[in-house]
Image 1 (tube, rainbow, N blue to C red):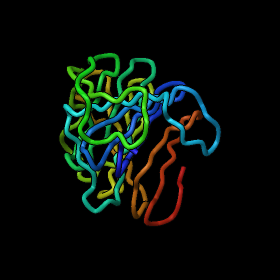
Image 2: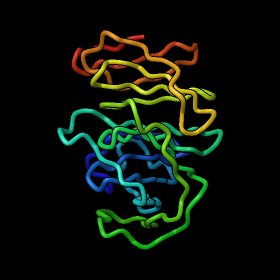
Image 3: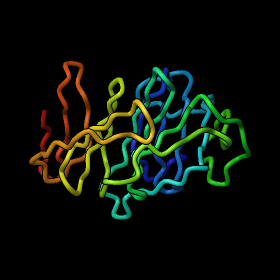
Image 4: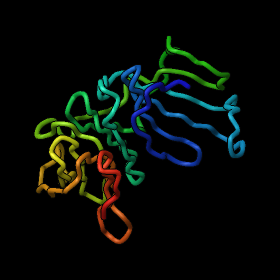
Length: 197
């Protein structure tokens, strides 16, 4: 309820998730605490933290997504920022509590606050037209570009990331990408109504 026009989601740990709030142009962390069962909507014990220091922008046509992925080994959250044609990352181990957001809340919550003073940095700022999907494995990152139909591979051992190459796909509307456990890349073709490996 606190992240209208949600564009992407990434699991943190337990019942905690990160989302891209396309209405308010920021990133939000939800920690739902206890699992209240399928379909349950009680969030009275939940903690919600709004990260507004990095301004993000969704697709103004509300079509192309802005996915994100959590590197659980480091705590860095990698975010595709469609509207700013970039990828950035936030160190989720940093920051401190700020004030109460003016947007919402629209349900009872245990905590609803801004986070301030967190560490973030740009990962990719050039070469992307309509970035959409993202995944990481060790020191590699892949990003899909809806406009070109390419999957772009980066070395993220140093920042900013170094582009290593591009994979052309037959997708009409390339969006979500995922590196499977066997090393294959899976991706969705929104306009073609297909999933490829």
